[in-house]
Amino acid sequence: MYVAKIKPFVFPQVELFDFIAVDKCIHFQRIPEEYIAFFIVKGDMYLMEDDIAYHLEEGDWFLLEPRKEHHGYKISEHCTYFYIHFHMDEIQFSEEDEETLRTHLNKNKMEALQGKRLDGPILLPKWYHSQDHTAYDSTLHLLNQGRHYFNGYKEFFDIRTSCLLVDLFIHLSHLFTKQLLSHQEKSIKRSTFIVYRLLKELNNNYTRKFSSSMIERQFECNFDYLNRIFKKQTGQTIFAYLTKVRIAKAKMLLTSGNLPICTIACKVGYEDIYYFSNVFKKQTGYSPTQYRKMVLES
Image (cartoon, rainbow, N blue to C red; front, top):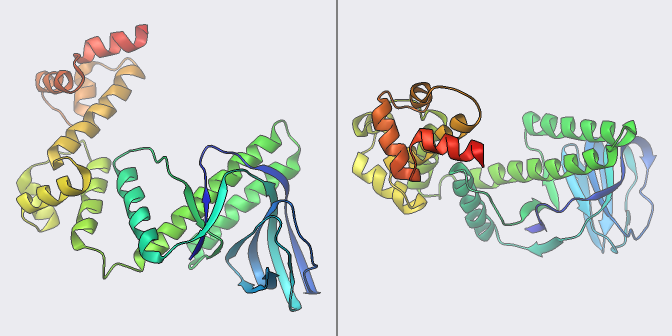
């Protein structure tokens, strides 16, 4: 699979961002100096790039590369599409086998579920098809917003458009990840899916009372086994990870308002304020009161 590897925190310089509807038209020949992205809203487009023919249909995203000749090879009876011309450093293209991509995307997903920042590239296929209406509609929404920014000529319109284009890259990469990983549901280890579910449960419901027996019932699996596979994939036990999430949320609440310590303890899943304080100090080296004072005075 031919994919673009886009370095994060590098912003594109957008030159054009618009859409057009054409009838009985064939794309002209050119060798661009910039990247050109297409999203097909309706109809068909027939493009040839460096002797490779592409038939683009409704819901397709396609990225043309600089200094490669492209032209139409067949008349489009009708085509409505967005086009984005932009310059950007740090985009690399390479052919990757699907198994390597799945391994990388699985790693990204696991780390993201643990709240870790990803330092690798944004992976985006050169040619991607939106397979359902939700993906199509969400992509179309971002494109309409980007066109509005670029053609609105308001203060810093160029920066807003650049930021939105990066957001679009991430959005499409997320859809690509979901699509690619869904194709391996039968071959991926069942344990990996269980860990995904556990991470989501702990991240979303950290205020709940968790116990080993409750987790066993919910996941219909022996707790010792769950704990073992969870630690193998995350490096932490289930309850160690839960504590980490709770303390991280507590830190945010301690420094973003004047909530009493007892209220914060309840909000992050601890009914006993003294137990909460002991856990917090063990994790951070400070009591909740000391931590709040230290951060606010720094």
